[in-house]
Amino acid sequence: MKGLFVDTAGWVACADAADLDHERATAARDRWMEQQGLLITTDYVADETLTLLRLRLGIDAAEAWWRQVDGSSRLRWESITPARADKARGLFFRYRDKDFSFTDCTSFIVMRELRLREALTADHHFEQAGFTILLR
Image (cartoon, rainbow, N blue to C red):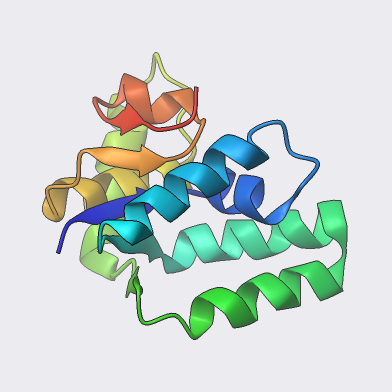
């Protein structure tokens, strides 16, 4: 089964109908799922997503998102282990000319380990790191 990494920007765009990328994000997610694809994300991305949804849409929207994704058999959760966090710190401090967040770096590590090339996101940092983003 082919995996698609979902970043915070992708999750939020899917959950927030007022987001400029909402239609493209939901269409891209749905196409991926129709092709029997697997969505992959991390605990750090979930942390960011829950917080951002709460701030933008309220606690009920954050809870609704969590209930939907937490119970999905088509979503694979990846944990940021101490080893992954160490590798992410290496990226974070190596690329001084980029303004990658630490969570971005943890996502890049997971994507490299799992050999994922595409991300459901509009975050240009993923392109800077060599990945293809599905929201432009």
